[in-house]
Length: 223
Image (cartoon, rainbow, N blue to C red; front, side):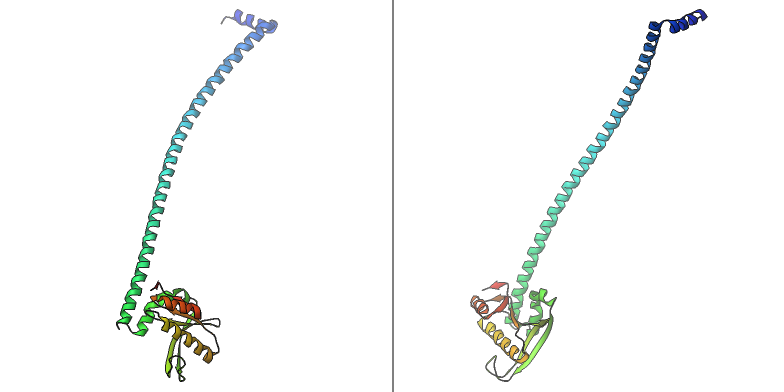
């Protein structure tokens, strides 16, 4: 650019207001175009970042969905296994009751072995009660109508006494026997005990008598 042209431009900028504003406007548009180009570039870069994040979010969402399905499947498996275990436990208990009863009836078990085998029915009580053996010579024959030795288990806790009778098959005579043993125990020990009779099965009429006499019953089956 020649020296004369520069001088002329400087003069116009000083003296010509219209020319001066025109130059300022041109310079502003150029700066604005530059800023706009930079903004467009930044928006494009931001769009790329958002797109990448969207892909990652989609992958994470898919992973969470797969995990949810896996947890649901595991929950169903645990439920089925729990039901199968519960059914198996019930079957084992019924089988144990039947085998124990048959063995006792046919002389395969001693009375003490029978008592041990059936104590699973008293599992909850044995955790909180102390078990003792009460042996007493009934010289008056109060229980059996003749002198005899009374031998019965007693559960004791905080002054509460529970007489427990174990029978392979509970009938009316067994209920009446335990009831008389309870009366004798109260007479001798000055403590009125609760009465509990336990066995694999109880006859219907025996259950009715137990209810009349206040004897508690634990038997899986009523026959």
